[in-house]
Image 1 (cartoon, rainbow, N blue to C red):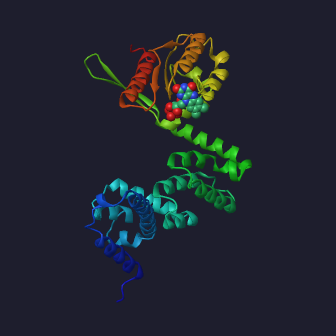
Image 2: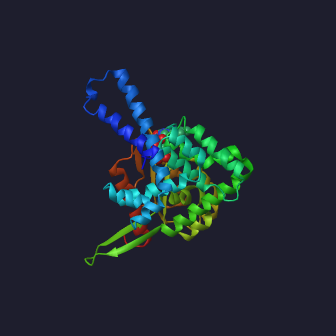
Image 3: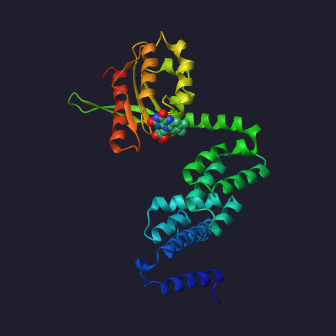
Length: 327
Ligand SMILES: Cc1cc2nc3c(=O)[nH]c(=O)nc-3n(C[C@H](O)[C@H](O)[C@H](O)COP(=O)(O)O)c2cc1C
């Protein structure tokens, strides 16, 4: 039987790579090396696009091998992480829904990481959105992908509806925030685990985005009244706390002022160069509310280190333990 054209093409890729297998990149001139790196990167994206498209339609392969999915089978067969196989399959199935994005990956004009972010953003859009608007959103994000990496794309992805359908965007944004809030509530908990020697481990679990939303944008005066302690987090922006945290205080200050006197709180502030103004402002407002700091604010400047995370972890644990009357 004649070899399938796809297998023939892949054999040629192998043959071409065999031709240069002995070539030492150390002797490639700078300009050529630069070009080669960009070309390899683009070709990897194209191959990954092909691999994902194959995975999306390889349920029959999975069935033949009694595997959970083609991704799971491939991960096992290539001695990769099982979790990676599941993730690949998810992305492959997601890509299968977005033809233009798939084509862009196959041409190498977006990379797989960008494609994953775009699929996630498009999948978040309301189910009842006009298909024409969905196509427009996909086109917008593909155009953004020419300028932005995954982080920027994720932000733009959340806002894509504002660009393509401003009227529908507000309602959608609210739905997203509510969903995040629900997820945050479901996942957030503090567990007290006595060691039996008079010491108790305080274990806190929180969903990053959920906590951030609850803690800054969504936490309402009612939630403040119902809570026994508070952890406040903010970036330092223009020498002050974030607008979101300030807005939270604006709403909560008078409503909660009398009822929450003496409650414990902790604050962490992340800045690029100087967090003094933001911390001072938080101290002034919480001082006005007569909240009690469990420790001085954790100030993080520049890249977040493991120690910074540890300090935030301890801050949360200390607030929880103080609120529970353990310290
Ligand atoms: C509009 C704006 C103003 C900023 N002002 C300050 C500032 O006054 N002091 C500072 O240390 N960093 C400042 N930064 C840098 C941010 O605080 C910094 O990027 C921070 O690490 C972001 O925190 P996050 O990545 O944890 O959200 C500013 C950033 C922006 C976008």
